[in-house]
Image 1 (tube, helix red, strand yellow):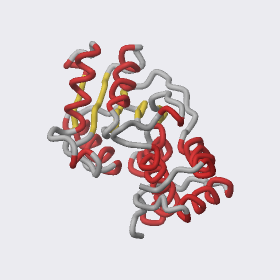
Image 2 (image 1 turned 90 degrees about the horizontal axis):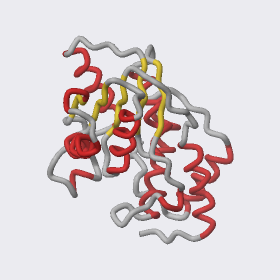
Image 3 (image 1 turned 90 degrees about the vertical axis):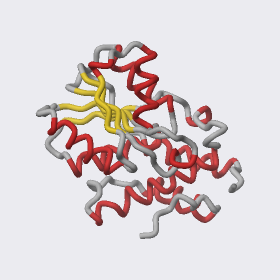
Length: 218
């Protein structure tokens, strides 16, 4: 694992701040929670439902790159168990448990709603903190006519890593996500997002330091 020195942490904070959209959660037609290894995302989504911000809670996620090696059950099913325990009733929850990446999260959720003749106009999307912007860009590419706000668990950068996903791994994922934000619009996967020079320079320094394991082969 690449060593995380103070200068790498400084650059990582720049990426962390950029990946946040800065949206304030508001009442929406549905809350869409994107699955992952981070169970705090499920808690955040269920908490927003319990605050009355939407009548529906959609949980989307099968087994992705990280969870495929550590979990036996789909992400959405694990998230649902947390939501039930927190007090969200089963009849308020929809589960999509086959998707393996962000694009499929959106595509399969759209199909699920179409099958149920549901057409929500506004979404409150819940994701990991460092994946807010890429999730926003992906959703708006696939579903541009919908109103969208994106939020995540409010956890400071220094407190976010866990034993399962240590700081070096978090930085590697943020670096990989920024690469995708830059190049995926050209492949039709996302809408373009402005990347300030300060952010891209921090990205290049982190790549040079070896935080490159999550980079895509473009």
